[in-house]
Image (cartoon, rainbow, N blue to C red; front, side, top):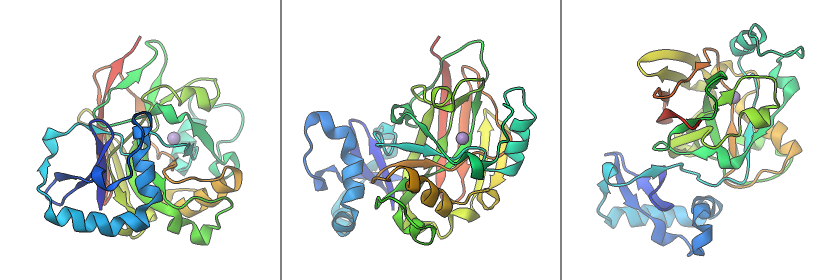
Length: 284
Ligand code: MN
């Protein structure tokens, strides 16, 4: 099933014909100020809600996708985990870059980092570039959305904890500061355009990632080449910080990262998962 968030945090199902059926009315009423957490409620109650949703969409008239404003499918995750330098060829390109420190860029040793959850944005939001005189890169990444939470989740059970997948851009200012600053600017974590539920993805390590800036193909890779695979990322990260429903995991970027300038259209496509485009804009 494909799930979207749209307009004022409403929730919908995207049909095979690319139309939208709203399902917000099936969810518990949340106070106005908590409506951005609706998708988290859906994820937490998925076992109960899924049969109701399947029944509901049979009888409802869909509306055109064009008639809604897509927002980030998980607009307000509690946490955004990310895996650094998780493809060998990307580690090597970073090691050879002027931004590399002296420490080796080995994903399994670096473990994880966190992006501010407020950096999450959606397919119709601009990527706001904060500097005119710094290099800002796109990083195309498969994003996991956690379903059942937990701490110290064993790798063998980890994929049972995944609610779904989406496309993500881990936008990054290159430079000497800590990752959590360079990757946490507002709009530096575009995700979408929808969540595809985990039952539709047979193997997250068998996907193909492509990223274009305008018409130029910049990144082309396969998730089988991750250094730390999806299930071990969940095991390692949940050993540190307890996972909660709706938490996002950016699984690392392959080689081919490059600069983004105001006006650029950045498009990521992941086979079986979907596609996301976002346009860069100066905020300076
Ligand atoms: Mn990254």
